Length: 191
Image (cartoon, rainbow, N blue to C red; front, side, top):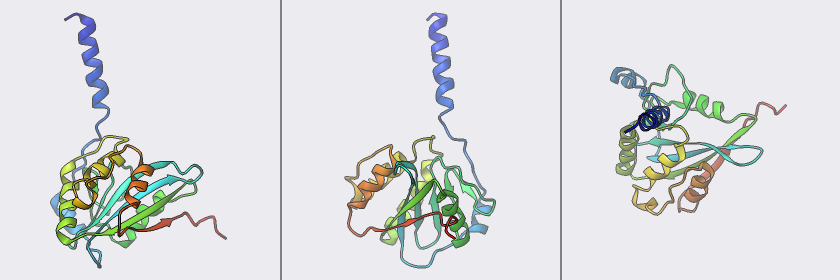
């Protein structure tokens, strides 16, 4: 191999290393201290952040209420709060206040959120909670792809298309039975 081949390999490795998100790993103690259980049935909620002007997808996240805790899978996300420990793109302790901060941070003048909630059996909800913790940090621009791939592991969504685009995942998810949909808009401009 010549020096150009070595240089090409080096540059490829360097470029690929920039694709990985850094691992954030809160301690078990931090997670146990922050743990929060949302009352109500076990469910998952797909959050799709859309650009208000164009309707183009900007980000996907998945909320899991498994009966023991509420988790937010925020793959390749940028939201942070010191009271919400994170472990590899999974946010713990998402009580109503922190969940409100999370949605307010995403729903702003330029973006709104489409919320799609579906009830799951406790076993399925716990399965999703376990899987999001196994996935690890998600590379940038892979939020929708990681969520649509995960959702296909549930029998009722096994034919869901895997896509890179949040608005496509949102539209595809909407065609299943039992989806409750609403929107969150920035209301600070209202007088």
